Image (cartoon, rainbow, N blue to C red; front, side):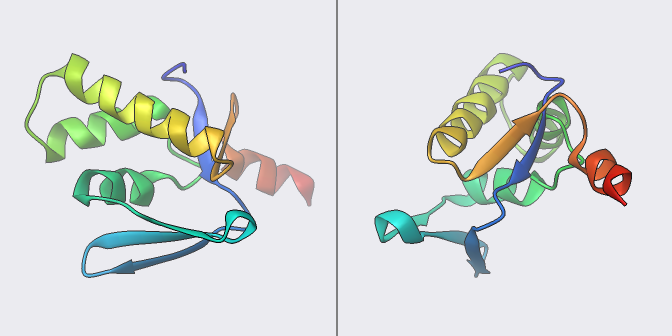
Length: 102
């Protein structure tokens, strides 16, 4: 996954953050995911305007670890979210797409 790729949450995702823990309902699989604090932090960064590199930089500022370790953790987590169809990835900002439609 390239660090210049933008990420956005899927449109049919049910999510709640309770006491700093993200809970994601995967309705099609009737499954509830619960993220740890790092997963929740990454999930909160996924807004359609942040690219993978932005999320990595934010994690570097918020957590201890070297750039390689944090980059690998973020990218692996995002790949899992993409495999589960919880996020979409694009070469252009989803914010730009939303404004160009009108």
